[in-house]
Amino acid sequence: MASPRHFLTLLDFTPAELQGLIARASEMKRDHRAGADQRRFHGKVLGMIFAKSSTRTRVSFEAGMAQLGGHAMFLSPQDTQLGRGEPVEDSARVISSMVDIVMIRTYGHDIVDRFAEHSSVPVINALTDDFHPCQLLADMQTWSEHRGPIAGKTACWVGDGNNMCQSYINAARQFDFQLRIACPPGFEPRPELLAANRDRVELTHDPVAAARGADLLVTDVWASMGQEAEQKTRARQFAPYQVNEALLEHAASDALYMHCLPAHRGEEISAGLMDAADTVIWDEAENRLHAQKALLEFLLIGR
Ligand code: CP
Ligand code: NVA
Image (cartoon, rainbow, N blue to C red; front, top):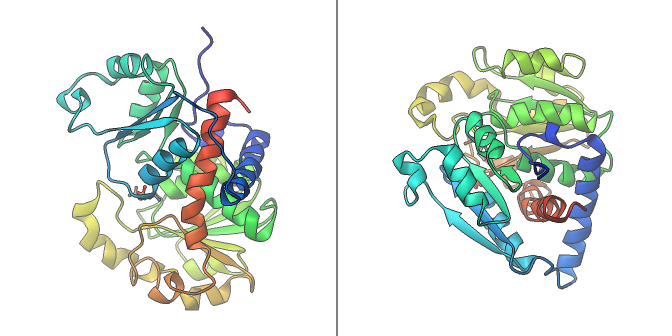
């Protein structure tokens, strides 16, 4: 049997496939809003493994699967044998023999790699410590709906060199834009990822320099899930890296700013920007639903 396609990072799909997904996501969004019946996956089951908390990811996958006529099953390690030490490889063989597609949110990226290697059905990375590719589908869809093609534009990442930042590095490569990263010393993304993308990615510790003339500013929490104990010390180190009205002044006059959420107003983003009437952050969150429906469709029927 041919091994299934997986979506573990943005590099698993070609640039053309990613562009196709974004276009399809916007089309499915329009159809959904027009009240179209999108049920085409009768009897199909999505297994959702969540080792970390989630609002957007769970709601969007579960609602999306229901809208597509299938079913989504929530599996937490606390309630399954995964949490009692059953090997990931064994769990993958068993779970994938019963469901049609699997989504995993977990800690080490090696866990989704190992699961995918032993899965007979497609596996989607719904966030690891290293990458969050589903969020990038939504971000790229949001950019495209508001501004058209992102190719040739300049995005600026402000904050931690975390899973979202590293996904933006992959996005810069796959969607053909320049990325400037401004992070506090010691919080850079992985050096090998930077080295592999030297032509598109610049690293600095100066948020103003990074934001100057940028078309898109992006940020995320200063302490990710699993780093809660570092929250206080990080808050001090990251204080100069807030995306706020003053920083936005340095960006292009029509710049957009994004945040994957959940957000901490007054930390990585100002309350004013979060609550601005013209922010696209809520579209960005909603687009998780549409982008992942397009992703499920692509992986389930290859469209
Ligand atoms: N942005 C995102 O993945 O949100 P959740 O953690 O709520 O799923
Ligand atoms: N970097 C954050 C993203 C949450 C969606 C985390 O990993 O907690």
